Length: 535
Ligand SMILES: [Zn+2]
Image: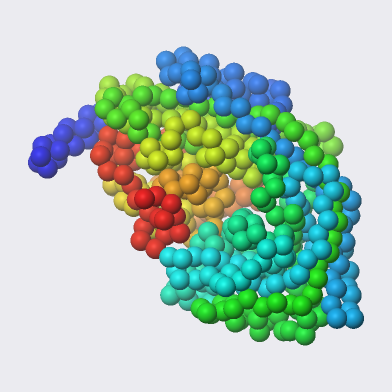
């Protein structure tokens, strides 16, 4: 049997390499990006005229390829969204024994709520729970023996591994999901807390306080929830480091000392004997957007599904800007959305049909907090237990051919091996992301599926340019981050060199086929925080 498989594998490889020229087409890929990123699509905001155009374009393209919609034949999956905005300027009041302090919105603290209520009042005891982590596989529980029902927990950002830089604690410098702020609020809610306050520090957060105040101001989005968000926290808050030091001082405690204690195994939570109070007035609105999904049924195991994901949405139009007002989102993420079409075409045009089924999923509202993928993970079109693995594409590069492939979340699962096998065929080199402390793996759409236990790949071309060297690639990559990322200047340009993106597509295709045509189920690595989610 083994030998037979080996032979088939060899035959497949040979035929693959002779077919590649037909499978991917740079002109066609370029045209998709050009259309999706055109001014006519108005920056593809969810629930806008740009969304209608995007849905129509993608549906027509999938239909032209003869690939049906994945939602009982329809190409769309409705995604009901809610926006919630704090409309007053709430004050954070801290009461101690005979002492009282008030902290100002934006300047000292930030707060949002995802409970869908017009008015929210908080008045509860404050407990310091260290990093707020409950990780059975690491024998670490900051909530051990603690009842925080109705209380407000104060939590440190990132994880003890980053704090100590000790590779024996969590993943050392590399962030685990336990370090991500979203986890802190999720775990506090699971523990029954009323509210959670994260202490902001620039290094472990990887961004300054201004990013907190900027991104937590104005409308915050969530998927619509049947229970109105009752099981979420009343308040999700941040305080800056000065405020934290003052609050701990009021409790007669030293913040820095407690922080050090929290980095060690066996840390026990500390009751601050203080009360936190605040009141929020909320404006709540409901809108509707859509995920777009097309599907090729597998020839041998149709009920087992591989998913390609890419977010179709971007930031839309800002009428307050002078001059250009359209956030075209050409790199972010017309390149990934167009890649879905190109991969769908490759699957369709390859003479060998896939053995497992393949889903091409363009998700909405990534920019509002991974909401389209969150909705899909909650209400999947195919059962999560039958979803074998997936690959996400967000912001492919237009800088030309590169040798290296950067893997976010390197080592998390054995998907790295599939990617490596495909990379070897294409003479490319797999590298871990060089800033694992920033937790990029937890910041794009694949992660919502990972959180449900589905092993997901997130990787893309790096900087080592085949003709111009790594310095050039680094420069181009920095220029994008500084001058275009989330700006109106993220536009399509005729002089883009898309050879590198095409090489990435080829790599994604081959990697996916190793899984789609195989019998194995990719698995999370030993010790991974996601392993327990996949029996
Ligand atoms: Zn993106």
